[in-house]
Amino acid sequence: MTSAVSFQKVSRHFGSVRAVDAVDLDIEPGEFFAMLGPSGSGKTTCLRLIAGFEQPTAGSISIFGERAEGVPPYRRNVNTVFQDYALFPHLNVLDNVAYGLMVKGVGKPERQKAAEEALSLVRLPGYGARRPGQLSGGQRQRVALARALVNQPKVLLLDEPLGALDLKLRENMQDELKSLQKALGITFVFVTHDQGEALSMADRVAVFNDGKIMQIGTPEDIYQRPRTRFVADFVGSSNVLPPDFVQRYSGQHRWGSLRPESIRVGRGAKGDGVAARLVSTNYLGATTRLALDADGLRLHAIVPAGTAVPEEGEAVVLTFNREHLHLMDEPA
Amino acid sequence: MRSDRGPSAPLRLKIAAACGLLFLHLPILLIFVYAFTTEEKSFVWPPPGLTTQWFAVTWNRPDVWEALSLSVRVAAISTAIALVLGTLCAAAVSQTRFFGRETISLLVILPIALPGIITGIALRSAFSLADIPFSFWTIVLGHATFCVVVVYNNAVARFRRTSGSMIEASMDLGADGFQTFRHVVLPNIATALLAGGMLAFALSFDEVIVTTFTAGQQQTVPIWMLEELIRPRQRPVTNVVAMVVVLVTLLPILLAYYLTRDGDQIAGSGK
Image 1: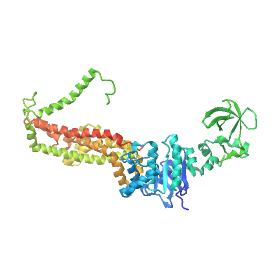
Image 2: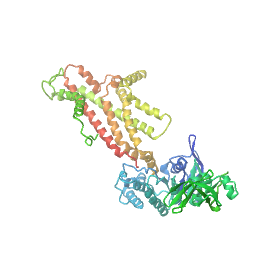
Image 3: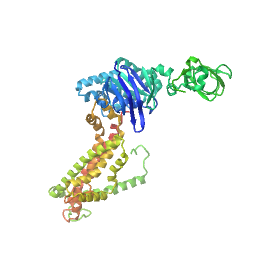
Image 4: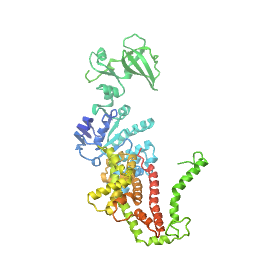
């Protein structure tokens, strides 16, 4: 089967900066794919390479089997939802949504009908006469979504689509985007720096750092079985354990990761486990996050709310199930 | 601006403000009054009598019409050149990054900061060095140097306030460069261009210094007026023309002011 988007050794360098460095990537048709990484990790440049706003310095990109290098954005069957939505302030909502059809020469009644339908799809029917300036942030985002979808793209690109929304709205939009993607069957590629968003929405996640993909996998893969220290740390702030520590428990001299929720915290200075001192506690509502110091090694544990928590500064014993200790590929 | 919201200004401040305004505008009113005087050899206050005959006299003087026509043509063509060059330059400086961008931006603004006499002398020596005879086009060229600045300043401010991703969005939605310019860029900068263009027109219309250095025997309206002041007869004709010039330049400037003010709401990004 042809990939929806395929990168072969794609690089994009800006002067001496390797924004994207020899990236290989295959995105399946109909997939909800997330590009996750800190700012400057190359994820947005990858998105722009797919959209056609950037051209690769080296390597080749194909979209549904067709070579994309040198093809300008307006000849690609790919549409983008921009981070700042980029709605046209001088056009009303309906004309904004119909813009893509207008420049393709679709007749007025036809394109307005299609735009109305797209607005209903994003649950904004009847908003066509308004100006973008009169809409809330969430509504603008829906308009941007409708404006992209009305062109029936093969791939929809979303650049930090939920970044500008408040928490409640963001959660609603996450659900909505996901069901929309299922209903339409279009390949969605979205860029985010929020690991929670990536894990909850995507079928597969690519974790970026320094212009390279650190790991590609299902959210569960990425979360449970990080391959490098960076992935373990960035995705869900796992505890990264040094090789010497790991050797004591697994017999192997390798970097390990341990999820904060896998650590049990017991009172007292003795017992079979890791002796540590409780540095601080953070109440997070459903859980409490504990910062621990095990002989110079900083660890974090997350315990459910309601668990009796020792005093700060108290000596504690940490235990964990050895199966939860994940050994990483990264060489020691 | 909204003094009605704050506490009322003290009386002395009001008087000072009134004096300032009178100082600025009374001489202009004086010129208007002299356009109606019956005394033609010198300006006498108070005017011995009032008449509207000078309007008819002005209307029938071919030299007035020649000067006016030259000024309008020069202003129109300089403005047209400035609109094209200024917009292109503003687009390049605000939308892209390249080596020497800041320098170019400074060099474009420089002609308006330079005294007109420097620009004039420089152009004059350049023209004579290149053996270009003084003509209509040398005046246009001289005026275009500062008209470009005005258009550039207006356009660059608008470009900066316009979200750059809008152009990408348009391309993304299938519009090529020309369609994007027509449907997205132009509507968003139109009022800024209109304002800049009108300002440029007004500046060109009453420009004296650069014109004296770049014009041959031809007279634009301001040059004609300077010459006319030396002539002993029909002096109020100058005042009639002055009134027309004030109206011709004031109206576009007022309009430009209103257009750029309203532009604040139009140019906001999609955010």
